[in-house]
Image (tube, rainbow, N blue to C red; front, side, top):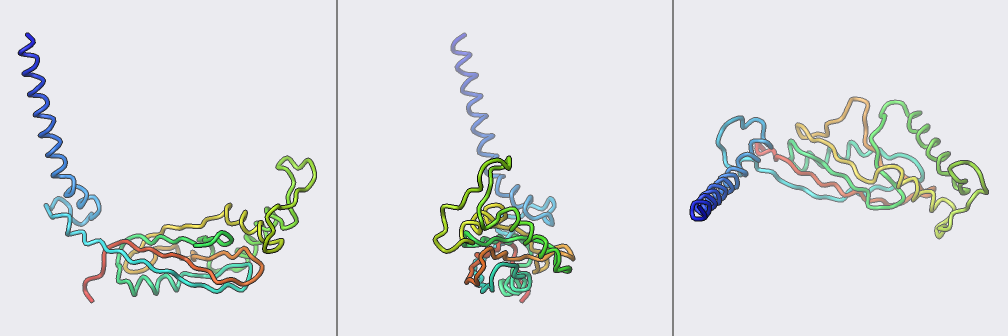
Length: 204
């Protein structure tokens, strides 16, 4: 009885190892098919994906609190990278400005956004959430009264964005633009890291 049980265990272990090896051998092909919908059921090697990367830092000079449209600069860089389809990841390399996707036609939208965030995070300090108690001043004011409010406004918005690239351009809605949102009063030199991953145009 014990000998038969041991034999069955060894047989099961061999079958499990064979299934694991088979799964490992087919995993790259399955990944290639998932990442490349045009492959269909063709048995192509994973190298057929031909994914490429490009990394750059975009430099922006702001004139003070407000929005700088980055859309055209980003599309120009994507064209120079020759990445035709993929993903673009943006990171603002600062703690007092942020990134946003918003309205590109009516400037009043941006004016209202700015006014709302200033009201939400005023420079003169804040009261407890319940509205009771004395107003509290910010402890961090090394660079002026707009210093700490700028950090809070950045924390409440976005420092990173990820967008799709299609046909060598950002895939955006007709009314959408990508903005750097400056939260300081004075102008600043800002940097945004841009990292594209995708299929490169090989026809040029």
